[in-house]
Length: 316
Ligand SMILES: Cc1cc2nc3c(=O)[nH]c(=O)nc-3n(C[C@H](O)[C@H](O)[C@H](O)COP(=O)(O)O)c2cc1C
Image (cartoon, rainbow, N blue to C red; front, side, top):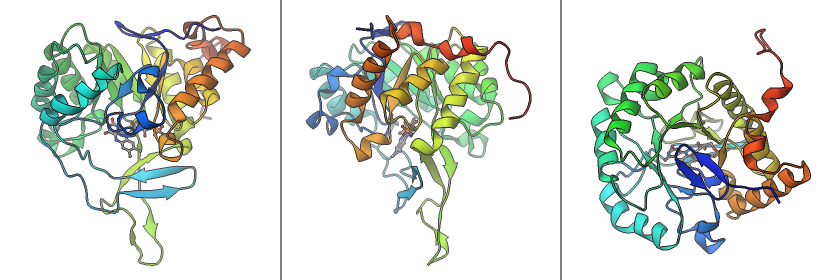
């Protein structure tokens, strides 16, 4: 059997399959379908400093091979999270990746400080796909300087024992520029990718379907974009660990991300159709690694790069 242990910076996980932020709340609902402690880790919904009610309804729309959501970071805020959700996860033996989000750098820093020296926190994932209030709402993750500022500030404020991962948006011209800015600012790794910005129009009312007008596209439709992002970033930063995600529904989907350079994967949208998806993906991945003769997950990380001698420079 392949050794499933994997590392995300200084964090060692028993296996490489995690939930994706926002798709499993804080793990309680999934626990009725499988033991959340059997996953590599649970990634929480992005937590903010204060409770938030999110964006107007409707907040979900189906699309071919994916879904659009405009939840708008609805959540209980850090106080309730520390009081209820984090202790629940810890009591149930889950390793916890806490996703944090904010509108300015100080908010991210305040959240990192609140998580300091808390043994229940295994890792921090910094969701920088949020509008920067100090920069007329430009999304942090679309600006290398702003991304680097937030990540550097969080890295300095966070517990040094806890890895800090930057979660990047695919909605940029060159994701490697943002990846390098985060790495130079001290990110211990990268989560790739957040949703792609999309929208849908109702052809009866001729109005946008989502109450928030635009929303994030996720699910199998975005998988090739996500695999491409993991590939490109691993090519330029081969030693920086990557948590890959985007449309993973099966063990073979997960294997694509690992072969492109991810050390672990998150399963998001698939959970809405099949709440057992993360546990199933883990079992299927283990089988796929065994069938291909891998002694460990680590041996498969980035292996697809070996089949390409030179980076392809021409347009596709
Ligand atoms: C309903 C929903 C809510 C999400 N909420 C968050 C969030 O709070 N923070 C975050 O970083 N990403 C969030 N995401 C993005 C996912 O974590 C993931 O990056 C993306 O959906 C791609 O993976 P998937 O196709 O497997 O869902 C959300 C996605 C969905 C579908």
